[in-house]
Image (tube, rainbow, N blue to C red; front, side, top):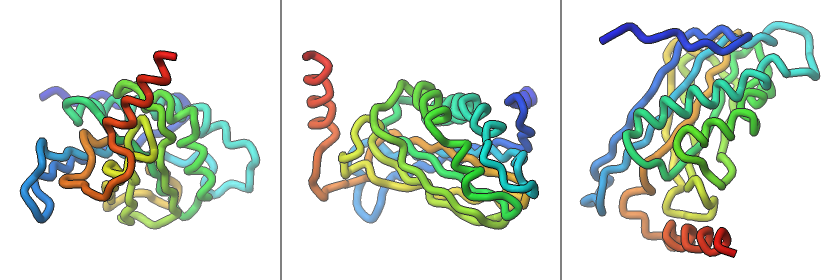
Length: 204
């Protein structure tokens, strides 16, 4: 196996990239079809605003976030190994930074290229943010990528990195899933109903 290339994102110092794959074959009952694969990719990078006076301008992070989105989306798509149905995002900011520094990394500039890497998505990206010490866990929320109200796809994947974030770092996470929850049976709009409605809207 060849050595991985160091991802280059202008203006940001990336320390590591981690991809987590979670395959669930049963969940208290026999599976109702294909296994559920959830994937999360986390990029750990130096926070350029950590330890500095307050700044209203967070462009050093915002301007690089589209490339972070493309990187994370591509790695998620590769690890998913097939069609993606759900997506989500999260960020953990080290204690020398502000929560808003993390939010700057996952605006629309991040979201659009992230979605494009696995075929696009119409629904908004569910999201969480926290400020914490190294090793903390964060639950990345997931929803159906084309319609937020598809209840069967509400889910999470938990990510924790033992040595990150350092006080002057940010951990940015994008996540996907290949299907809804196993044996989901709580009603609401189904994936098929949402897809039919979207197809009807497109045909008008």
